Amino acid sequence: MSSPSNSESPNTQPDLSRFVSNLSWQNRMLRAVWGIVWLLLFRPTPRIAFAWRRFILRMFGAKIGRGVRVYNSVRVFYPPNLQLDDQVVVGPDVDLYSVATIHLEMNVMVSQYAYLCAATHDYTLAHLPLIAKPITVRRGAWVCAKAFIGPGIEIGADAVIAAAAVVVKSVGPREIVGGNPAKLIKLREMRS
Image (tube, rainbow, N blue to C red):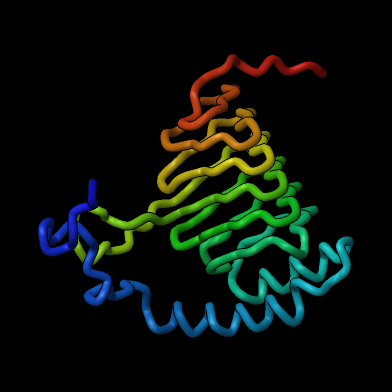
């Protein structure tokens, strides 16, 4: 059985020739300069050069608290939309797609290869316009390795997002969630 041709099913493919970014020229220029600085002065730094990377992120408009540890392989889309409160750790190869604000509150840990994605596209329109929605991760939460956090999500205080979880709806305080899509596993019991 042959697959239908494009002539049999018009308008089933998005018309990306009409796609126009709704991001400003200033945004694009800053991201271009940021990309060069990231490549030359951020990425090649020694793993322990946290103070230097905090300085660079602040120079590009990120709000960075005390004791923040951002590893050299972390990718930040747009630093002015990044807010990291005190004692946040952003592990190796994390992708912070900060089209909208990404706010990590105090003592949040984001483990390696996690992807925090603060934008999507409106798939109901042929030209797929960009939709940016902020992400907030509340104090003490842990986003485990390879987890995906979608746009507009809030992760509650002390919550745990299990490894490789796909979070498409907000997570309450102390909830441990996992899977695709992420579902409640149990509540986190804290010991001193």
